[in-house]
Image (tube, rainbow, N blue to C red):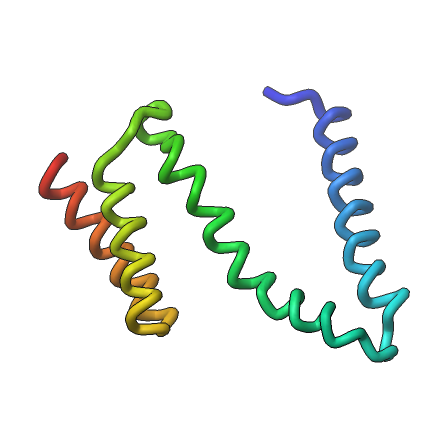
Length: 108
């Protein structure tokens, strides 16, 4: 059981941090035009988030206590190949998931 005071401190801290991070873009920038180099970099933010979420699960998977896991590496490779060749997000995500579950089923 977690201490209630500690829980509320974490929740309020996350709320304030989230507000300040969003306000930095919405409040300070508003409708002012952004420089083209910043817009170009912001366009890649969504593309960078998915690998940042998946990479720890491939390199240090919690399901295997941080040990190397062939199905996860195979799924990551298949996902990169599908993404590069098809340039279709749905095919890439579904293909990577199908590869992961197929390899987990085959290799156990």
